[in-house]
Image: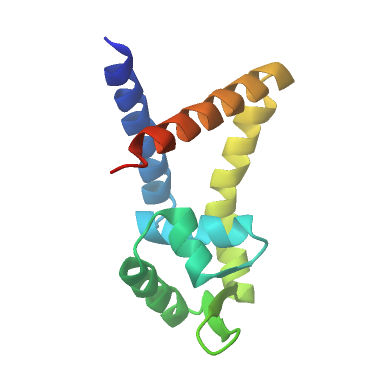
Length: 140
């Protein structure tokens, strides 16, 4: 298998791992990504940051947030005239500990099982790949 095929296969496998984890935890992929991002940011996150960090469009984020609000898991707090923050409610924090935080814990467990050198190599090569890919796609 050539390198690009292997790379694309691995990306697909990684996406499948997250999809399956979300499914097992009873969440859609978009809800999982949103709760993950909010948890990762300490329990609150702007909608703009959610869209950027989850790679979900604003319509998908807003639809998922309406569902989360309806379930009493999040609330929106106005920051200024335009911006809003997504904040976990107490119920949302409890739910996230049983769902999105489990995904974060699994990731930390994997990285903690690697040597410091392995983690640094993995992260450095990922950063290098992203930077070079951005550069090559800058004219698109």
